[in-house]
Figure 1 (tube, rainbow, N blue to C red):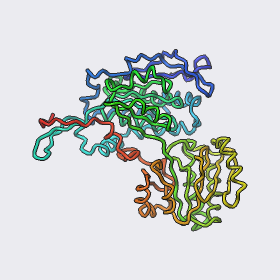
Figure 2 (figure 1 turned 120 degrees about the vertical axis):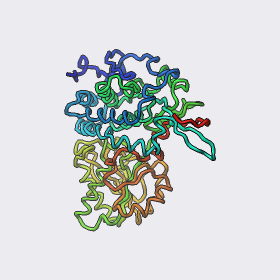
Figure 3 (figure 1 turned 135 degrees about the vertical axis):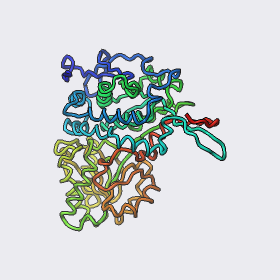
Figure 4 (figure 1 turned 60 degrees about the horizontal axis):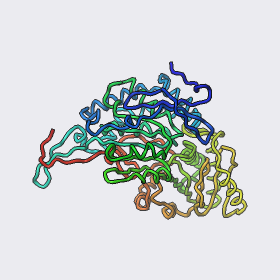
Length: 471
């Protein structure tokens, strides 16, 4: 049985996985602003690369075999039986802002990413003719025979730690590519990736996919590591998740032959039509759906709504705000109830000042962890956070398009029958994803665009043999 206690009751042991081999010999200290200290294994830079003189371990592994293996890994990611996941929940409590209930729920959902149907959908949705993943495929272009292959890439992934869905998505997509992958773990999630990879090592210690992944932690920006490893002679692309600072830092390594692909910071919104006021029961139901899109993952995920545009009179919009605050005080699968986060002190001060400017502004709720709303006629100048949402009164939902930018990721819309009416103008303004209000965090993984693209397709090296012979 795994030891889930902290070393010496003072340090957080952080294992690494290098080319499928778990490393638990922790000795290197990392101190965080939270006051916590983590211990990691020492890094050998040579171990962080796969030589280009060798083909990737999974190069000749049929995609069907990879899918079967991932499905077996998914079955082993049963939280009630998987000691790595149980250990991760315990230790994540020292580095993550998410509570143990939410973390456990996230870990209970990990297996769904590895289901065969999801993996096949992700491959087919991104690639189309997935035969190009298994070898050179002959085609005729303007009368000439050519062969095309989606060649396995060499990728570094800088992961984000705001939601534990990033590691499983990255690992599944990486396995589909048949390439090699170095996962740089973030300080607020040093355990999810390795819990999955350690499970993978148990299921298939010598499987080519197992050998295709490494996961390690080092302090972001450590040039002694990054300037040595983030090079085109070792890797093709740097995949970066996270905030603006992380993306801008990653861009410094862009060079000929070394591409940057970023899943950069986004802001999501909600649109609530006048239909929400058909009855008091309808209003409560719509507010509960709106709250679910706000409170998940402490409102830190890009898909969490920070602004909601509500169509109605001031009296109607205020009724919605009151119902929304009430709904935000209840637990959801991924959101805290009364014990949730609160807005930063500077924003609380802004709210106190704006609250004195009624009726132009009106503040609902208190900074007590149950949720707050600021109602206004235009979006506030700051970014709401800590279970705070800015409800903006609009005459017509189409008016909200004015405030949409290319940084707007997901839009939850009520009622659903108005999505078709609004989608072209929203997407033209920059929106990337449209969904019914209340289910922004409940979509199925597999085959859908992400941040205006199909990630697996972008990860691959698309190459051509103009002699045209198939393999």
